[in-house]
Length: 221
Image (cartoon, rainbow, N blue to C red; front, side):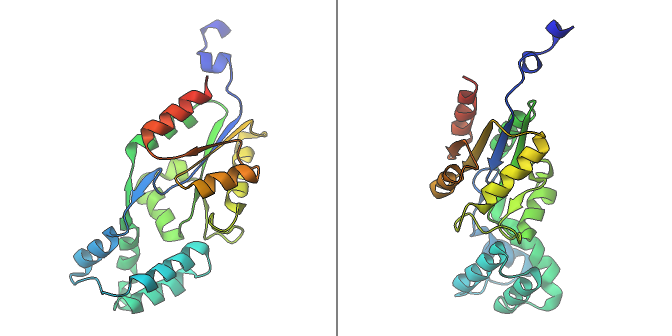
């Protein structure tokens, strides 16, 4: 009988899309972990004085301006590695990340509701995207992720194209326009752009899982 159904089904939630950043939201990151892990894996000190150049290569890889082969070759040469070291280097590259289980659990619970979906929107490269999905167990949340290296978008620091693409994906999943589109990011520039371009109707500047829980609870008031 209808009266026996949970309230969530008796009173359907409005179609809701969550457009969620990756770094500092689902996963924490510390770039100093990479040099430490490099030294552990390759059994020699991380080369000094290469941080700036490595950062430029990283930005090129994240933006899609530098492909995987070119990025690998450039980094191997910079770091004094050999071509046969590429596979190991690729595995070490995502070592900056650690999962934030409180946020992951919170968002999994939220998007398990009827008429609700989540699309990750991240300035990241394909190696780190794959590691987060496969190695860190976030594949369910990262399906159809919009990432800055993809050919049809530009990074969030440049324009709003990633947010716009993510909304299209989310609404295709929902099978209807979303009444609420929530942009979650740890940078105010990004949340502001999501709102200004019309991709999002709500925004949360992320700081802690606790603050996100309060924000999501407030949507139900």
